Image (cartoon, rainbow, N blue to C red; front, side, top):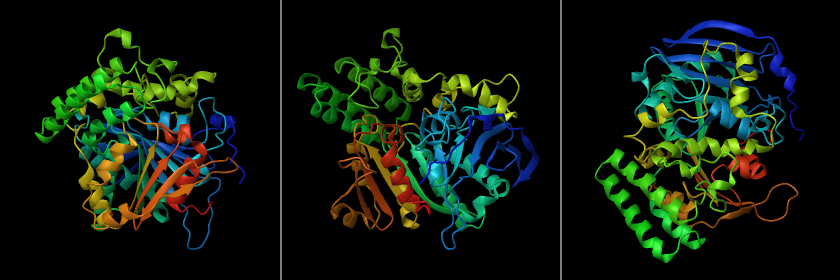
Length: 459
């Protein structure tokens, strides 16, 4: 299929303001391009708390009877990393950081919505610092309020199955938001079809990921037996603190473990264990003496930004330059940032909480749940993802685990690119040769995978 061609000059198209709208008591301002192919805006999800969203209509949208065109809502991690900037321009959106067409954009398969979520992330903002969310469920309530507004402001959503697709900490957003949306739909409060939830290298069970680090790094020679025992002891400390509900303390211990691993592994890159942290052009400098408790969130966005190393533009430059000028509605003197420290630290007492129960609830409703994981990820390792999946109480789990995996190929390239296992409404993809950022590391199989997940008419 021909790749949709997005002209960089489209950034200069005149703005169409759709004005101030109100939906379910949520004040909204929406704008877009004259042809309606893009819409964006703010929803005041709580008084003085504003979420920013951006919708793209796929050029490949089809009016096929019985096959409604799907919409993907992308949820970035961090917490506090900008989906409008990172997910859009660095991973799956129609344009890259140089504002040139991306051959592997997911817009070929679905309409796309990006969020700067929670409030305070990216272009989203609060008028009072007391309004940052402190729990994943508060985030879910805000995002559900936004969706209630978008159903009116983006008419295509009413006849389009919506898929929540998440990355990293965004998986915890997707779990809680998915349940919140499902409950709202069942209660008749939200007119939308939740097609499924897809969790990419997602921080669903901090305990299981933490316990996976030592064995993984021993198996790839980044730790040795002399350091493995100490790393395991530190991981067990995190486990005990989680069990005791010592959430902030367990996060500190987790950061201490990551500091220890960095020192003893030669600064392995936690997002791709084949790399050293210093190999990325904009990796955080460990010589500053700052602890990972302050830097781990920044590394999430700076790793993606390192993909710009061959670019003439930077993500910060375009988001505070040509993109801001295009959007027109960003508040005066407001500066976009890749990563919000305020959002990150506001979630300190929720960061280490698992969201396995929420996945069980989604499965019990019959909603499709997909887990996909990059083979080379450490921070949200495949071993950790497999471990939390095995804790599900879903009645189909035993049958799911007993099935063989199926190999997947992509395009004309040789060799297996992934494996998949599916049973009823649970699916698991093992993505080979990818780290934490599957669409960046393996764009071909990522595009093929999302097409299968959402059952795109453009498959």
